[in-house]
Image (cartoon, rainbow, N blue to C red; front, side, top):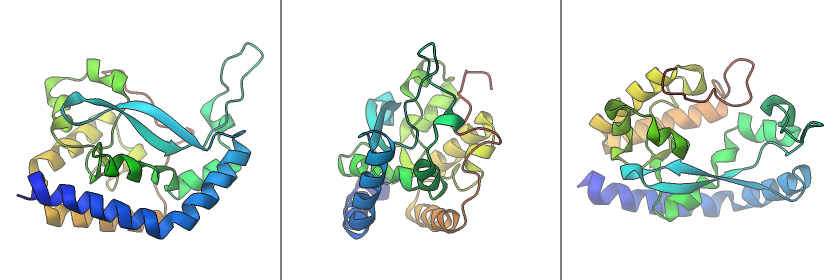
Length: 201
């Protein structure tokens, strides 16, 4: 009952209420990121969703598009703007994904949606994370986030898939709020973004 109906209703209603409550902050961030990113406050990317369905995740754009002399993008940690660094440290870059929740593509809680290109290199075990909708936050995010290995992320995601319930979702949301108040594990040491998955790491 919870997985098939209650969770969907809870996600939609909660996402709508949160968007309404944070709308002033949402608008301020759009303006600040519009200025710091040359008119590009949002970033979209294809991700893998439930049952391997590909969708476009929406995030606030925290890095500019500056390139080197050869036309290649500069390293992530160089392109991360001051505003973007603040937004990311507070996990505010995830706020636009509430729109993905309203569209039914994501849940508030679930395995984080990884890049769609990874779908081709997952093992059958790793693919199990796609048995449920991806989430804005999840069990892996409150247990290490970007400072744990890819294997640990998969294990934590699948642990959640097998135990998904209302009480666990509430616990994850509460722990997520604590992470936002006292940010930890936002980036891997020396990296602005997490290391890409290659099927072996």
